[in-house]
Amino acid sequence: MGKKKERMNFKEIGEFGFIDKIKDNCIVNENLVIKGIGDDCAVVQTENSENYLLITTDLLIEGVHFLLERIPFFDLGYKSLAVNISDISAMGGIPRHALISIAIPQNQKVDNIIELYDGMKEIARLYNIDLVGGDTSSSKSGLFIGITLIGEVKKDEIIYRRGSKIGDIIYVTSYLGDSAGGLDIILNHPNEINNKTYKSLLQAHFRPTPNVNEGRIIATSKIATSMIDISDGISSDLRHICNQSGVGAIIYEEKIPVSNTLKEYCNSYNLDYSKFTLSGGEDYILLFTLPASHAGYIENLFYNHFKKNLYKIGEICKESEISIIDYNRKEKKLEVYGWDHFS
Ligand code: ADP
Ligand code: MG
Image (cartoon, rainbow, N blue to C red; front, side, top):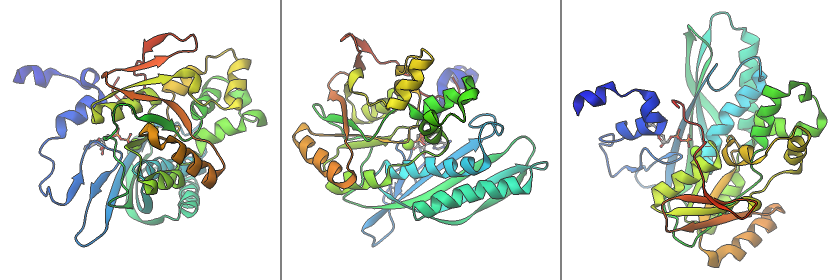
């Protein structure tokens, strides 16, 4: 047994298999840690506060998460903080303080890194976040950006990944697939990068808009049973909700919201947009569940606040699998195509 363990490599166990192996015996102070490994943020409490602290961190590596010749420095800074803000939004929280760690190759230009910080400061200002510190190092290979973001949420408003119940409705807060469409332009049709028709796809990819206000409305309504942000693609992120809640799900492909711009792009290049919507990822919108009896209430509340719709894409069910009813009304198993660092 022990020997077999040693021989296992990362490709075999995958990113989530690895996290599963290290997640035990991490917590010494059970009374202070409400949720450790396994959700969008760690949830901790300090004495005498009516709020929980939410803590999240993300590491972005040149050549793995981004290519410097494909993203402007400003946007790279903007997006690096955006992905962390999104994790705070996924628990219904308010982002507050950020720490930025960066490792820079010797030959990198100072102006570029200042521009990267300008991008971070721009989104920090938009979301009322303070950049309060970090760490700086040289790097022997490529640029590394590590961001830790701290937020807070009232104890009775927090929403976890676990908690969805059989019969709950599954909602998403916006279109899916725009960011993946933008990435497809960059990688496969770079001649379209300056085409104004597709601007919103590139914008979704370079400067995603975390749904903090949407998350707050959902949290303060206190009727959602689970929530996650869509970072790796719906097939992977809905699975996290199902695994943590011990349920299955069924989703309807025709109910998945797709922007007209993405449809237009896919039509002109003869692409199937479901690969962008189901497994594209980097949407940074929210997916949440609530009992069917509250559907009308949340839809009205959302419309009154934002003048936009919520999208009902499916239901939570008993089976442990996730199925999808496709455009031809055929039911099939939804495969996980989401991002795994070691696959
Ligand atoms: P997200 O996509 O929402 O950022 P991840 O899939 O990266 O979340 O992480 C899932 C969970 O595993 C989170 O609770 C995260 O804090 C935890 N985690 C990821 N990597 C590590 C690690 N190397 N050590 C400890 N916890 C980790
Ligand atoms: Mg997340």
